[in-house]
Length: 209
Image (tube, rainbow, N blue to C red; front, top):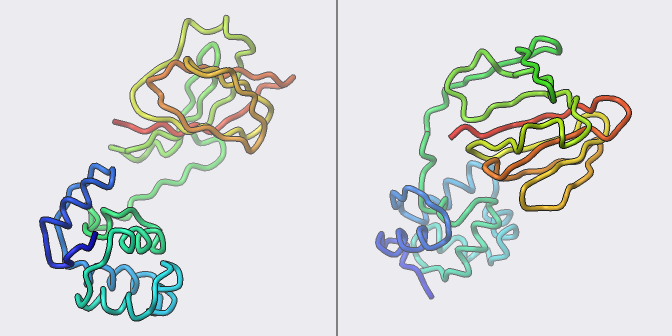
């Protein structure tokens, strides 16, 4: 299937059918590809090689002289390390606000529970989209929890020290050591215990929805 680079209806349909829920504001495909290439400071030859396309093919796409097949669009997206919808859409937030927070060791806001000791990080930033915190895992058995922990959003866990066992509602327990990580749906019941002689420490990052 070929896509007319100036056919807005086709661009919208391809973007939406690619499996991502994106707000699509169709652009000139050739101009968008050129912009993405130049943002990476790539020559035509470099971009074509990364996408597995001929230089002449990429040049024609950028200049609106060729209707690319969907296979070519996928190759372009993979070569540019983006999703297919991003070939047709500008970033939803073009303005850079420059927010940053630095939390030094020991400066995190502490919250202790029976099973964990939390150091909340980046506390000075409001309206965050992620909640990062370092946790000392005090629990040794599932019986120390009052049922499953569950909440909205998704969660990333990274083991900093010690060995932990991650229990989840729908999977077998997983033993994890320093450097291991897991990403999971936080609405699924989950608990973490330390299985090393000392309390383990982990980094948790929770999405805020």
